Length: 265
Image (cartoon, rainbow, N blue to C red; front, side, top):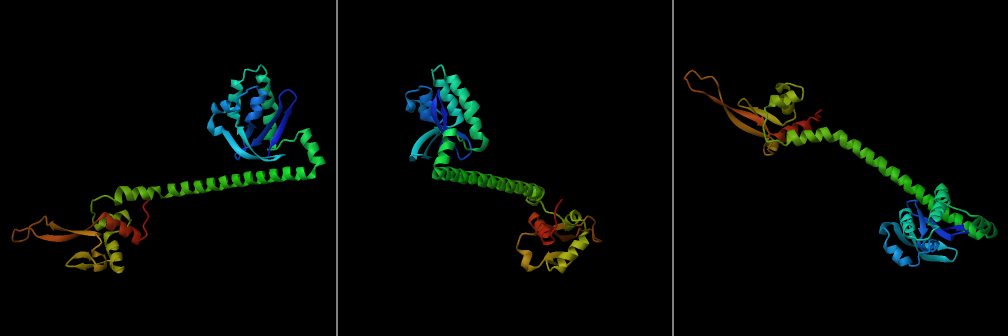
């Protein structure tokens, strides 16, 4: 909280104010109750929104004191509790003079305060130093908020950029079906012959009895499955022959994509 600031009114007396860490105006509850002739301050406090009631050590002319302040919302709530005819005038004074002065630059100097600053340089230095420190804190807080907002925006952009790929992996690569080499090759914009050649050159697979099979370093990783395929045309003796066919699992498909640094659009 800022150092204590005092507003003076011939009709309502002194009212001590301050500024919260969020740069919101705060009012001394005891002063508000006195001005509105509300005798039981503690009882009044129980009727207010707890989030808007702040008890804090406050720098005063007499040193550090524990004081209870209320925010603007609770200030109006206290006014509603007052039976004093002048409550409307009190509200008008606060809303037309006190609040604008606080919000203008975070510090309010009455004629009395100015006179004291001139007469007592130490008081002026103390008041302005405290104001400078609190103002710097607000600036640093705003800069930190801007940095966090920028960081959040960057993260959101990165999430949007990788979303299509992530969705592809979730919906396609995690499925349970298997694919022929030419299906994967077509998706990558090449022929099955070219893809088989690349995998052979990279020592991923070799050909045995007309079937492409994986080298032992990759054979146990669940990248492929072998199926027996019956030929559609009979042999000369009338029987139907069979052959072995290598099919890639979705795990194997993902392996090929990452191996060749292929990015799905």
